[in-house]
Length: 616
Image (cartoon, rainbow, N blue to C red; front, side):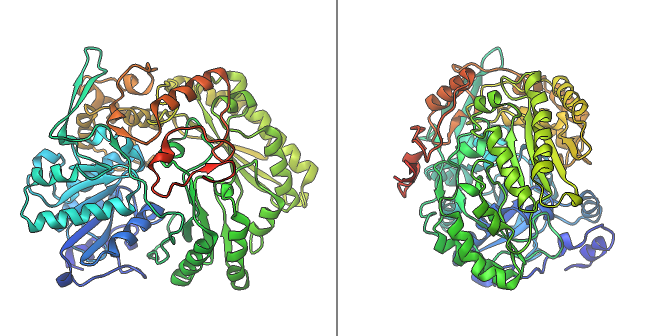
């Protein structure tokens, strides 16, 4: 560590974020390396170190001989200022080397409000923001993650995007770049080769034209580039072991525990959920592999808690077997199991007994809507009776707190639906009063609402977001009707969700807006301390663009959508049928009950998909 960095660390709030040296970090001999990858997460250390995708990609890259992958996180404001004042470029934690000296800077884009953080990291690294201004082959600046399913707002800044699951695709790209370096290819020559990999989108190989009304007129591929670019699905997931040697952080992080991925994708088909569509088909790991991975992760880290992660944990068909296998190791050592993302319609006494075997963790459920009518519209197939029965089981089992997540502004929502959230919360409270094991402890019911953000590649990708003023009115309506002292209510702010929606459904013209927002001081817009709506509105106005055009406009099925340059594998005709079913208030069965023919199963090299309760 150089003296400038040492002095900077003495003046910042949390120096452990930037010091490196953690247990289980991977350090390789530079003399044995011919490709270096900086895995960049555009948020703070505490958030990035909690991200399972970062752990998976770090492990996969470092398994490749002669490739060294290191971690890079966005600095907090105090460290950002110190680095700029002292002339310290953005650096990787393992070696302390400048990011600009790496062969690849690979960004993980999972949240639209992190876009300015990514641009700021490029700026701190001393790299030009725009791809066209970086003429050399390396460092190659790439991105992957859920946001890349609409890559257009960030298309000017990245050399290429990796669409879909990265365990194999990333590694193929690394090998391709290694060969390109040996062959002394130019950057354009390499990008043309890279476009031949399934799942790689190279923005410079596509032209976009616009109609007079601002909608997309056409997307034109050049030099044989594919249209659309179809996402990659990692083969062998079912029989694979989850990475177990995660880096142990040197300071407290958001999710400070061991974690393994139970299943990928989701069988449910909630119409608002982007992750539920883009990670299809649903695949679950074998119990034997999960037990092996979980125990290895605990041994390698020393944690006293293991989290079983997925979009819908309780949908793993052999979850009880997984828990039993793990508890044989965990219970004698006082290690607890945590199961987030539980479904209210399949939480059982058998599962509860396992969850609380060592210690109780919090219970969180996401009904999403207060009324059955609106839950049918969004295809959230959970009834009020199922939720209350689940709460009864929990309260009888000794739980005294529950968190409930809802959305406001969903398509078709009325004031009656908003008030139904308050009514449902009160019924949960009455359930506690009737069935609590110990009423002396009291109860805490935490209700939270967020603003619906229409996302690409979902059944609601054509829907409008409600205006900010209307969302705030609905928040006030709900708040005024949350009267029970044991029920606390919190809500997400409208301004952030508005900009998120504009970026989520934006086109390539928003690159100029993003650059302007960064120029005006945008750094960590995912954080309330740094977000400024005035900065964003001024940046849109500077380029004559209206955020309402992107966020609050209903779109026709016939419109060319900016993100149609990539494919999630789910047929657009299926998304249209789901949108029409929502308008009729009709539900669609989950994948385990009946295959809906969405098209995604054709992408899976394992030939795995749920059908009739069994693997097809």
